[in-house]
Length: 380
Image (cartoon, rainbow, N blue to C red; front, side, top):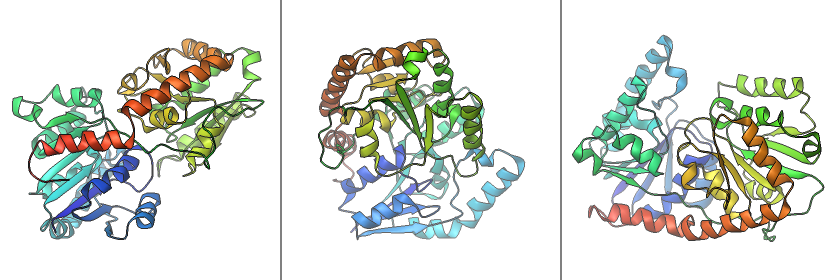
């Protein structure tokens, strides 16, 4: 049996790793290994689901991360790269395929002489020298590049040569339809209109502060009708983001409206209880899984016009697409949905229809197989 080794940069169950979990069954004919820097929710889920996938933990797995962008961080990064050298070469020596899930684990490519699949869940703007170097290496090293949106593909195509462009293909993600304890997925009745944002506590990327900015422009009447939940955890080592968020909420007297909850695997319950979902990214978000989850639960979504979000939300049909820097307009769209139950219902139904048409797990599997089978290198 041929061997495939998957690499991912963390063990959470946010977007990229959820998609990795959905991808694993497609390689069931292979002896499957997954290598990550620590044990967590992803490895727990894999162990509960599969008994034939081997999980390897490498605490010094070299990943591209913000914490390494200091003189000491650079030294640590190259030390990790050297320390893992023998283990990585041993692991990769008998593999037919190396699968890099996100650009964060691109350094593994320096040790790989195997067929390399790179699944790109990021948009690294080429205007940054560091980002451009990462993108150039990915184009050179990978044999096949699967991008999660056209926005992601176009970012790489912009600096690719003629042959490299042939490696790149957009494959929209898909997810299994989620349900809340087999309950109907129609909007629940509640005294308060519940607004949900699921995502890492990374205000400079995920836009939690943008939501707080928009609240300043909501009428007092609308504020009295809503409850907003931020569900997520900060990146390890960046707990200050959470502390700053809590401080701002308290300082602006928003504690009765806005709450912060730890990330949970029971997302179906969160979506079932929600009336409106927000994806207010203030940096290009390649293809946020939270949009798909909300659509699968018939919830309207307000998202920004960055990255792949406009490829997911049909403006004024399944939700609203807004600029990433206009809190007044953001507030207007929140007001419109909060005060119009029929609009929430119709947008939710429209989003659900789009989900069934484009973003089911079956659709994802078919698109993925087509992208790889064209290579005639292996059969999935």
